[in-house]
Image (cartoon, rainbow, N blue to C red; front, side, top):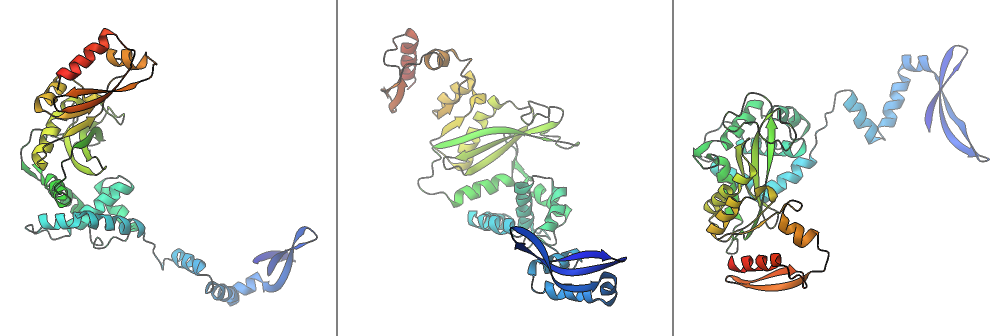
Length: 352
């Protein structure tokens, strides 16, 4: 059913009608004539009728209240979901412990949580976070203002001591304590994955880390920072490192590995990284440290890969090669008798 307006003799009339099917055709049938439109509006009958009907339509009632400014809408799904994850990971407890000796006059943990949630949803700045917050119901974050977000981020980046890559700061303490909470007798980080990316920014900030370099987000006109992220074999993040924007990927691997072993007390590590980390000096240093590693290879430009993998279509057969640290399984071509393959096996066995 719906209301239809018809004009006759210079006046508009309102009718309550419904659509019915008669003989295969849809026709309108008048249920009741409501009267002249101008007289209904003047007497208030139309508003009373609409109000009476709205009581039986919750959605219409909510929409009318929002249109009149009597109701505001806030989103609760994101804060509830990620709030549970925040508590389960122990982030709230770790931050509370680190803040126990500080006398901030605002809830720093709530400011950090809100900033993290904002970056997960829209990835904006702290200034944008303050405006974004108005649309979300985040417990304990009602009174947060822009300068609170600035101070919370400054606290996380507060320098504690110098370091090879970047100064050690409060952020590092958070990462180490989070790892310690889930550490057990078998937490050896035997396999870790590392990759780098760049974060470009506008403005005059970033005096220590901001620099022009190879931009992975295709903004060579802007200054940037290099971010290295390390995750474990289960896909959980362990730590991140910030470096100057002109830092080459190949120079990042060893300092990150050394700092990883120092910070988390790791003995055995197998590093998995992409081909941007390959360099003769890097490989030699990894061997010198006695670390296992898996590094990507440039398929088209590496002669060994081109000779043994790309240009030879014969099937592969597993081969067990005895090494000093145990047997290692390789996949080889059974009928490949070239000098190249023999040299590869000799070098592999000799490298044990």
